[in-house]
Amino acid sequence: MTSRNAPELPMIADECVRVSLIAEPLGRPEAARLAKLLKAVADPARLQLLSLVHAAAEGEACVCDLTEPLGLSQPTVSHHLKILAEAGMLTRERRGTWVYYRLVPERWSELRDLFG
Image (tube, rainbow, N blue to C red; front, side):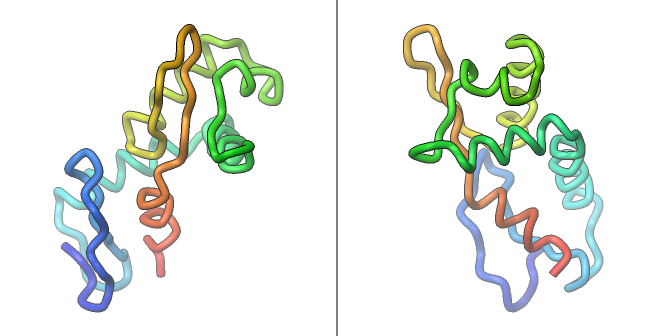
């Protein structure tokens, strides 16, 4: 379900659709999809990770660069990054031993526009 005035966003993992909570009532499928997205970002470490990836040089960050700023172990950071990637907030690319992450701008916009 989309707002009448909002342009369609490209599909990402067959889930990215512009939705506004105040434009019209949500159907059950949209509410379930949005709940999954909100649950993925409703964690302080995950919000910090999104911020760190966004602020990183060239718009990408390696797991190896994210552990120290968060003060968390590499397995814990990888777990949080996996949840964000599964929610469509990040893309990941393996380069040798390390995995690099980038924000998915359309998903970030979806969150930003959710209440407006």
